[in-house]
Image (cartoon, rainbow over all chains, first blue to last red; front, side, top):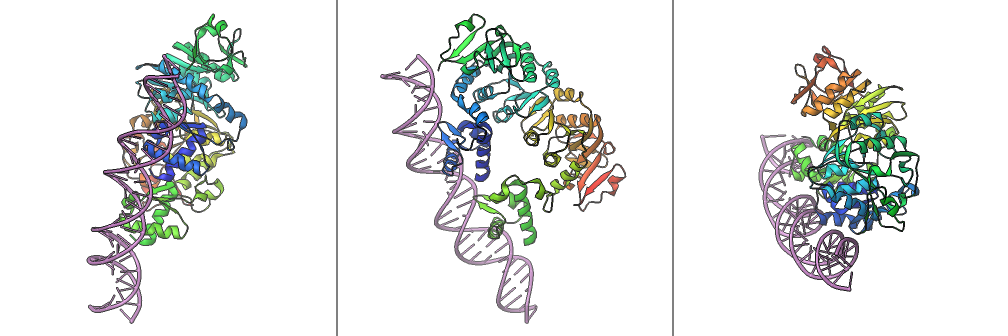
Length: 249
Length: 249
DNA sequence: ATGAATTTGATTGTTTTTGATTGAAAATGA
DNA sequence: TCATTTTCAATCAAAAACAATCAAATTCAT
């Protein structure tokens, strides 16, 4: 692969995901770590991205949509921790569902070399899953452009064909009375169906999601375990209703 | 091979792939490395491409996503011409299927601002479709990493839910006796099912696909119209079996 | 046809790029 | 905090690509 092409791919990847790990770039391009490192140095020199420990991220100035961009980068390290722990729960031979969303996306890098089958409705996930040679099924249905998720009745029907050992689902709100909620009714329908078809059910949520309520409810607290990170809020109350794993490291 | 012809081929190759390796150009033209090197130097001198270590790439200015306006004017590649014509067949209100593959991919840019619904099994298509805000459904099923297509029984079942006004399908081989063929049986199965569910059926194929036979047959010649570009081969024989549109402009 | 001019392909030694290695630095986890 | 793991920067040898050169082949003009 020629240098300009490789660097172009790197830039695209950074633009698309806001942050990339060197390891993922190595997988994606097939080049060595040294080469990627040199590329990143050059690209930073040109002011096209920002080097960070373990990879690279977009420049602050260049992030066009402050709302969306910030949202997905802000709690990146916390999401990474949650994702890392979640991935450690996955065993060889598992068949799992990965919800669309940035936290579940972060899981993928930690799943490599596991002999598993992944089903997902997150279109952004597919690139990385391909890179890691993970056997992947995608739900069929309407493509939601904003969230890059597959939704709709078609997706629900596709889901009926599958049963999962474990599922990892994101949420926008966790609340004692109102359970798990998300803004989009169609995505909620998917999440609901996924939970119904899975033996073990995990909700991935950083601390900003607690005590929040969004429009569409997709499950009661008891119906899934919560994986979250450490924060001020005391989660003992929630622990009375379901298992809550607080990832500390 | 004559010098102007060779350099023309080089330019085409650069335009097509954005970057080319010298080795590939050597294989493609049958000339020696030295000659190619000299050609590249000259072409760079003229400002028609950019030399990079190991090959050449398009000029920075042109390497940005070419806007559709200029693309459709003169120097459109053969694939572009086919894609452009195919897109012109699409009318407001149509529901259509776009096969995975580069020619159908090229159609997408020409579909903007049409009020249509697109169904596809090509994962690479989704980004562009999203960009153009085209209402899109994706087939569900196994993700074929190499071709970035969705295949498998799941996809076939999903297909049963849809009926198309028009479908645009790629192929690897077109042959008088053996009909339309493609190397992968699973992708062939998809193509077959798509044709069955569509009112009007178009096969997109540049001239290299004629008189070729691949492993898996997915339809007889009569079952679809062919859209191709102009070339030496006389297609009258094929016209006895089905409609063949030869795109000239 | 003959000789000059041009183009081509092979060869040479040089430069650039690449990937692996190593010890230092940073992040992580207890 | 300290030990462990991960990432980093620097270095180096191998590989790939390069520019320069030259002889053979081709083309062209006379």
